[in-house]
Amino acid sequence: MTALLEIEGLSVTLPVTGEQRQVIHDVSLTIGPGQAHGLVGESGSGKSMTARAIMRLLPPGAQVQGAIRFDGNDVMALNRGALRRYRGSDVAMIFQDPRSHTNPVRTIGDFMTEALCRNRGMSKRAALQRAVDLLDEVFVDDPERRLRQYPHELSGGLLQRVMISAALAVEPRLIIADEPTTALDVTNQAEVMAILDEQRRERGLAMLFITHDLDLAAAVCDRTSVMYAGSVVEAQAAERLHESPRHPYSAALSKARPSIDASVERLPAVGGRPLSAFEAPSGCAFADRCPFCQQRCIDEAPALRELEQAMVRCHFAEELKETLAGDFEETMREHA
Amino acid sequence: MSTPDAPAVQVEGLRKVFPSRGRGGRDVVAVEDVTFDLPKGGSLAVVGESGSGKTTLARMVLGLERPTSGTILLDGTDRTEPPRSSSARRERAREIQIVFQDPYRSLDPRQSASRCIDEVLRVQGMSKAEDRRSRIAELMDVVGLDERQATALPKALSGGQRQRVAIARALAVKPEVLVLDEAVAALDVSIQAQMLNLLADVRAQTGVTYLLISHDLAVVRQVTEDMIVMQRGHVVERGKTSDVLDRPQDAYTRLLRDSVPRPGWKPVRRASAAKNGGASQSTMEVPS
Image 1: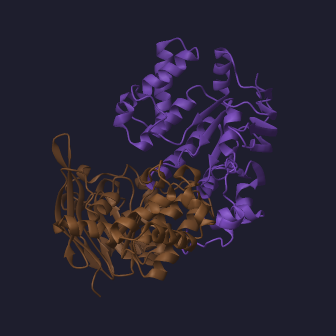
Image 2: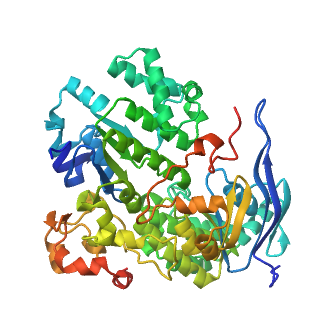
Image 3: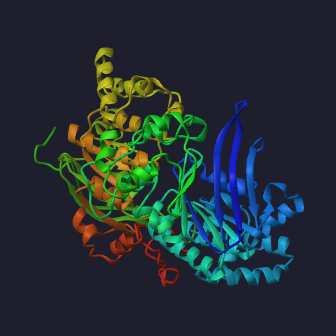
């Protein structure tokens, strides 16, 4: 299988008050055509910055190392015309807050047809007809009326469905969805995710799905990468991640979430707070919060390596295999 | 005026109508006939999505919104009318406090935690600086902030630490009731777990009563004993939290429960949702 998107050893630094600060450190991931890949992490883990690097939308002054290849082409080396094609028709992005990514004084119709007219050279009339069809496909009622409305007249869930159909309009090969349902109510989230998942499968689109919710990622993705402090600490088949996590951080993340089925006296919380890449110590970034930390973790940064169809960045992944798949809440509680 | 047997919060037939804005609009009924008792030391969740009326309900209980009809009793005393004088407002503040969702916007950026709480204590009549200092130290201990964090400005604190400050500030006057308005919703998963444990500790230590406003059923399960489910201003289901979540009776409660991602979950589209307005349609939507 040839990869559609290939990220290799990506590192990004951003200028903050005169010094370059690390925000992404050595991120590698591969997405095949039609594959859905989840990128899960807490705030500051670098997941959104990875998405921006893929779109070449990093803030000014950002320094990038490593390679990003789309369909074999080096994204960092694209010239202006090629970059416009890449952003305009190869990759489409869906954001968390649709309201801040639409122009409040332009109608939904203007918003949806702009890319079709400019990038695809369609006539306004043909573009509007296409927009009606697309809205219909994402189950928006009375699409003709919606096209005449303004963003503030639509509810959050409805506006996000408009964003999805606008992203699909340019017939991209990869969709990057950055927390597309985080701002929505839970019933709307289920609805929007079902539609996104359905449309993606029907069209054979690849997707990079960014979220903080491991279960949500598992529901719609083939493979999940877990990020911590700017690095990928674990990547494996999405449905296996819950049963057999290989990294203490991903294991702790799924245990720390309260359950809808039962309450517990104390949740197995992870002590401390999530770090950004530039705050990470020289050893393992998770060392000071890890219940299994040993001297080697403080001295030496682990590399991302393969372990039984999973990629993991932990010195002791083999030794911890059984423990992490079982109940280690007690250890977490004691450590916290 | 503490009444030993009275519930901490007693709400009966509460209704709130917002008059229409502009021509052709309809009045919006945000809360319709809500009744509940919250015993002292208890923990009640009000669950609902945007537009369900849960925040309007909380604002009325806090005295920030005047009910159209119905009554609110706090500790047996009628508190239906919002306080008007500053002394009445201070009195209400000693009965009920709130922790907001957004830890980044609910604190004064120019005030450290200890100065913020010092001000609250001074306003509430604790005149000796020494007493205030020891109360602040006590509160910092309850919420797990060290001395450096207590004197730092909010910008130097993480989201979780700020929420600890907000909880300490709310507890400063020893209120009977703490309203938690989505108080853990904006936090990272690993921080949220710490905060949920802290809320359990605080209740065990102080005996404070919780009124949790939330859309997150897993958080509701962890924090509360009783819950009511609201949809478009109405209570559609009520009961013990474990019963409601294990055996939801109302169709909307079932939909809410089925929409929560969990291991093995797949999102399902409600085929008719777009046609009939959908369960999560807000009461606030004005017909166009």
